[in-house]
Image 1 (cartoon, one colour):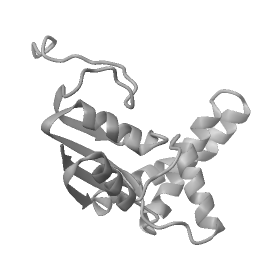
Image 2 (cartoon, rainbow, N blue to C red):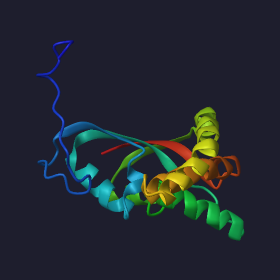
Image 3 (cartoon, rainbow, N blue to C red):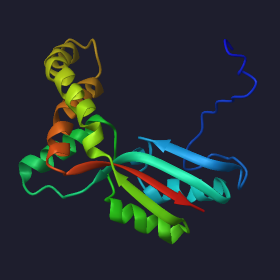
Length: 176
């Protein structure tokens, strides 16, 4: 409103795998750290493809699995990370690209930005190191929910997972 843009923008709360929007409505779809929350990544991709106009573009910035955990310690770190962020699973970038191709996307390009997000990952780690013990206490006192404790634990575990390339941060671009 301050910039007189209120008539140019509309916000909708929708299920991103079943939006209810008409076919071929959008030129561009952005998905920022959201597709990871889909149980079946193809459900999101099919809906996005349906919504894009011919020659429309999709840009996705998200986390992906790069290497499967090698031992129980790494499996527990990954499980903790996924649980703490309410992420049911992560696709590998290869699996994701294959899904996109099957659905019909073309000119798929991928940029690994893991190194670029490491300063943020380190800040999240530092904040979570002190907030995790506090959240365990507040959870026991029933002041905060368990998900807050899990989220703080995920903040600790994500740094290890990124540093050891178990998970990566990628930007994916494709066209309809």
